[in-house]
Structures are given as C-alpha cells and as structure tokens.
Image 1 (spheres, chains in turn orange, brown):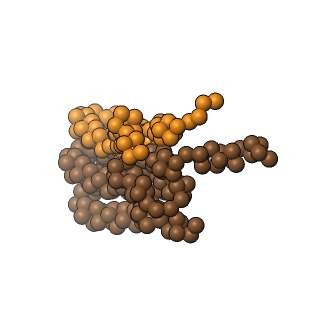
Image 2 (image 1 turned 30 degrees about the vertical axis):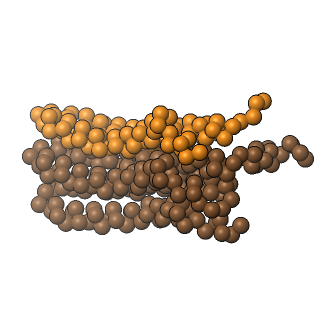
Image 3 (image 1 turned 90 degrees about the vertical axis):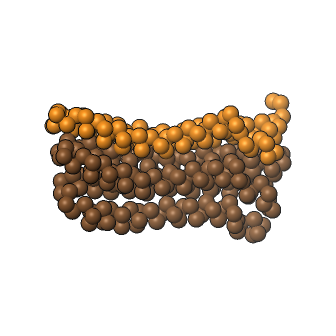
Length: 88
Length: 184
C-alpha cells in the first residue's frame, strides 16, 4: 500500500465530514412531512380555506428547510472551497 | 504484539502524520458532526408548520395571527441550528486549534469533540418546535389569549434551550480554552 500523505488525509476526512453534515437532512424531511400531512388534513376538513392553509404550510416548511440548507452549504464548502487545505 | 492490535496500529498510523495535518483533518470531521444538530430545528419547525396549517383550517379568519405565532416560535427553534452552523464555520474559517500549542492528537480530538458536542442541538430544536406548534394551535383556538400563550411559549423555550447552550459552552471551551493540552 502506498503511503498516505497529509494532504490526502485531510481530503479524506473532508469527504467524511461532508457526508456527516448531510445527516442533518433527516430533520427537515421528518418535519416537512408532518407539515404536509397536517396541511392535507386541514384542507380535507376545510376545503374553502385551501389557499390560506397551503400558504401557512409552505411558509413553515420553508423555515424547516433552513437547517438542511446549512448542512448542504457546509458540505459544499468542504468539497469545493475547502479552507483547511489552504491552512496546511 | 506488533501489528496485531488494530488500535495500536491505528494510533501509530496517526502518529506518522504532522500534528497540523491531524488537526485540519479532524476539523473537517468536526464541522460535519456539528451540522448534524440541524435535525432538531428541522423536525421542530416542521411540526410547528403542520400545527399552523391545522389551526388555519380550524379558524381561517385567524390565518395572519396563527402564521405570526408559528414564525415567532419557529425562529426560536432555529437557534440551535444557527449555533451549530457558527461552530462549523469557526472550525472551517477561524480555527483556533491550528495555531494552538499542544500535542496534535489532543487538538485534533478536540475538534472532533466540539463537533460531537453540538449534536445536542437536536433536542432543543425538536422541543422548541413542539412548543411553537402547540402555541400555534392554542392561538388558532383562542386568538384573544395570544399574548399570554406566546409568553408561556417563550418561557418554556428558554428552559429548553439550556442544554443546547451547555453544548455550545463545551464546544467553545474545547476550541478556545482547551484545558486538556495543559495536562499533558
């Protein structure tokens, strides 16, 4: 096996770190699914308020999405603009 | 025993790198670990969004009021996610461990530990989102009681935040005032 350079180790750990960051996607998935379920329930109960219900649901789901986006940003930074390599 | 114990082999392999390499590699792992905290606000705010949709369906005229309480609660539930993001960005762009004095393996492990610590943010995120959802439901049912409902929600959310703050303190201690390197 060829020896592993320091640069290679940092890049390898960056790959693992990017993967770990994306675990955050669990949360928005569960939360937005719950919101969608309740939204469907609400429209079923009060069909004439459909517009208002969907607006409230989408607004809340957009807020729930933020942490997933943060995870994605950190993963993309690790992959494409890794600041740690520059520190070596 | 040479080469038979995996942990010994692994430690020897780690020791073959420069300390700076280990710290930088561990920092990328720590940044990834910290972001796992995003699970919490995601679940909590989604719950609040669902309760908002439900409350609007029960009381369409109170749509604006319900939405406002939902967003207020969701904003508080977001804090743990933001704190984790801050720790990840510190590890990536303002890493204090790179220039710190001490054994490389300890500083590297501290970066991973700081990331692990921030995973605690899952709890406050889910809990505060649950409080936001229930408050949204209550305001939809009794809009006139909005101010006392929101006050109770904030009080509960403040208590729910405490463990997240403890995690942040430990992460910051590991990064900026590490007591472990002095013990070597």
